[in-house]
Every structure is written in structure tokens, then in C-alpha cells.
Length: 500
Image 1 (spheres, rainbow, N blue to C red):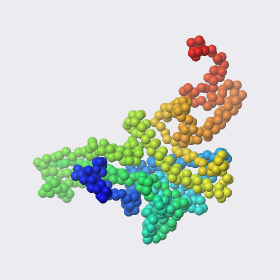
Image 2: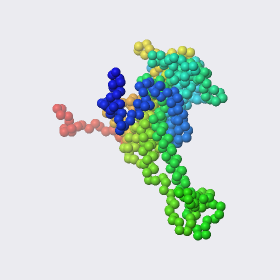
Image 3: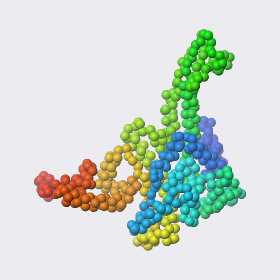
Image 4: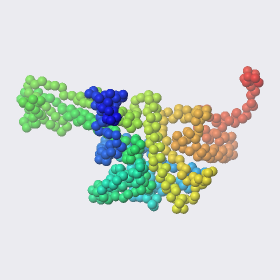
């Protein structure tokens, strides 16, 4: 009784929240298309497939969508997110990295893609398909699986949700269907069941009970289609206007054999001569000639399309400027804010990719290599636990609006203790320990080369003269030597600390 009473109160507008009330002034859409079901039953397998097809069509034929999808992959992946082993043994780290990099070239069981190509397609699949998967093959390779290959078996089996076997909420396996070799479609009977332990499912859920992924473009499909139709109609109208050339008043009448263009009533007609790139209209004596001008697109075209693109960008976490690659306007502060938001979005995607795909694949492949004797046993930590899983992923570095200002800000933060070199290096996709080691090697080489130059030419340069690049505030070698010659100046009485 309580449920029906609550439903009646909401339907009648008595609910405490107006968002849940149905009135004659505002109808509730969710009550018609969405029930208190799990996401798979709410969307339905058919609905999910239709969304994927729409997204792929936009990816093929819509320039904005094609650009956004490619831009996501370019910025999230770059030339590839690279692993850096972080165990306590540098030699083992180097061997593991070499092994994984070589394996990455032949990671695809079908011999089509490298591991870096797969990273790019995982990002694009989340955008247009909502998900993808990989079978962990026994020989140590990956078999990519597109989203529609995970589907219900025929006949249906109990406990299978849209092609995924679920037991007490846990995914236990996947029904991977093979494509018909003639049509590329599915028969429903040609499939393999892959245990969940041997399958890596790459998706991002927005509900706790969600089993299958939804394309990131799903919420903006209609807006993108509406924008495309609006632009196409505007372009067609502008082209038609551009084709109308002249209106000729002719006493003797128009040439014979011309096309007749009827007016709005259909009672009279005007001769129309079509030429290669336009049209010439002939009128009768006494006809009123209206100006034939190009008025499309109007002055509302740019603001309207910009507003739609901003709505699309907001759903994807990207500023309008990045969606359209238009950085011609805006102040420094607004450009920096746009870049920061863009980088935050890409960074979230990178962390998602590392957690759902890159780290599990490293764990699986490196453990398999150690077990097969292709790599030596990894070092153990103080607790006696093997460190084979320890790895840091180097993401592509993002640029800044004003690199010098950003570098100076980081220098102040590190000097004041607000941040550290390790934190800064991690944000830039580098490793602090390797940076220091590399800098040490550079200084050692500079010391050796400076000594050779001084011996050969009788000069007195130091390694600082070779390293310093004219950065404000940095001490040069000559300044350092001059400072060493100057005797320490005693403090004046007024300079002494109080109490001395």
C-alpha cells in the first residue's frame, strides 16, 4: 500500500521534490522511458546496439565527431603510454621494460596491431562503442573483441545479461560470438565462452550494477545530428541563393524553350534560364522586381552553432575552443582555464586506461614471462613479496599557454616545499630518480669536457658555463668563481640578529 500511495503522491504533485512530481505544467519523461531497473534492461540490447550504430555513423560522416574522437586518442595516448618498471633492482627493471616493449610489437593474436595501436582503439571504442575487450590468449598474446561480439547466446541461458554471465553480481564469463564470414554479422550460435579471468573488459560504468558499457557520445547524439542537419540545410539554402543571378525585364518576351517557374499561387509562371553555375529569371513588363541577394547564413548562425557545440563539449568535458580548434579569441586566463579543463579530462581518461587495461596486461604478461623463464625472478621487498607488478606508466606531456610562467611557478613550489621534484615529475609523465641520474651524468660530462677545453686552450671555464642556458637567477660558472674569490663580508652592527 505504501508504494502505491507514494506513487500517487508523486503523480498528483504532492511529492516534496518538484523534480519527482507530474503536473499538468510539466510531464515526467523518465516515468515513460525509464523504470527502476538495472541499466541493461533499461537500455535493452537492441537499444545499445542502435546507439553504437548511430555513434559509428557520426564517426564516419560528421567532421566534428571525427575530429573529437581522433583528438581524444592523440592527447590521451600520444605516441603510446610507456611502462617503467619500479622494482628495487635497476637491472631487472631494464630487462622487464625491454621484454615488454618487444612483446608490444607482436601483442595482437591476429597480427594486425601493436600494443600502442590497441591503446588508441580502446580510447576510441569507449567514445563510440562504450566498451571493448581482450581475450588473454594462452600463448601470451591479446585477441581484441569489439563490443557487438559480446551478445546473448542462442538459445538464451539463465544468468546471462546481454552476453555476460553474472553470478551474484560478479561477472563470471563472456559469450564471444564469431562473425559470419560472408555477411560479417552474427548467427547467434557460433560463439565461444571465455572465463572472466581470461578476459579484460574495458568500460566505464556510471551505475554500480551496470554490466555493459554505454558510448560516451550517447548523450549528445541528438544534439550532434540536429547541428549537422541545421548546417546542411543552411548550406543548401545559401547555395541556392548563390545560384540566382539576374532578374531581366523583357518587353519582347523571354527566349523560347525555357523552364517555367511557377509563383506561390501556381496561376502564373516566370521563364527561368539555367546556366552552368546559376539561374536567370525573366519577368514581364510591369512586374515588380525584388532584390535577389545572398542572405544566408544570417547573423544568428554563428552564435547558434557555437551554443550547440558548447553543449556538446560540456558533455564530453571539453571546452568549445578545443572541440572546434578555435583559439583565435579569448584572454590568457580564459585560454589557460580551457587548457586546464581539457588536460584534466585527458588525465582522467589516462588513469582509467591504466587501471582497466594497461596495468592488468602488464601484470599478466610479466608474470607469465617470469613463470616461463623468459625473465628472471623479480626482487622482493622487505616483507618478502615479489615486486614484479611494480610499474609506473609514462603518459604524454601536455603543453602550456605560458611555459616560462608555469616553470617558474613549479620552481617556487619546489623551493618552498609546497611541492617536490617527485610530484612535479609525475605530473609531467617523468620519473624523478631518472631525471636526477640523467642530470648527474650531464654534469659529469660537462666537468670532463670543461677540463679538456681548459687544458687545450688555457681557459678557466667551469661545468656551469656549459650547463647554464641563461635562465634568470641561475649562477654561471664565472659568477661562481668570482664569488669564491671574494672574502666573506662581516655583518654591520645593524644587520646582526636581535640578541647577538
